[in-house]
Image (cartoon, rainbow over all chains, first blue to last red; front, side, top):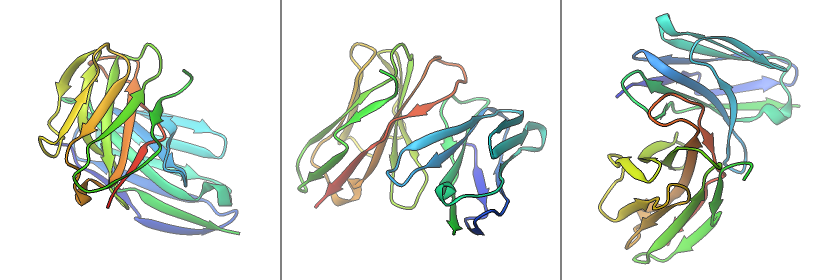
Length: 109
Length: 115
């Protein structure tokens, strides 16, 4: 199946800092989603972004499908941004999302 | 409903007991998925339904795991004779489309602890 690698595994930020999370995948994809897992365990949809660039407030994401990677940008980080960020992809010959191991973000006040 | 709803949110079972976890997807969503998430890891695929048809159960870890969606809406994941290694969060997700890529929405999960 398709392989998904996220980096870095852990990220510690000072409040107000910017950061970039990366997701590499091993094959062409039909679907790519970024999620934030909140402290109660729910996966919150951030972006549905199989290609291109999207922005939502302080968050933005870019997927370059031809080069098999996606980036999630967090600007002016806040303590509420803390949590685990997952990238998940659906391969072109598949219908289910395969998840990376996640990036654990800690934002300190 | 407005989102994917799962129950119970927390379940503690003694080893050997049977458990049933319920998922109520977003109304009208064709596709329904079950995932298992162990502590500190990403979710792992268990099984997939398109309406009432279970099209893929390749991720179910053993024959103690069984899922159904008899009327194409609510789904139940059943685990028989629970073992300690079954302790995990079980996530349900749904999407509007079937057999085509579409945005997936997750419920809050059911956290199972087997003692």
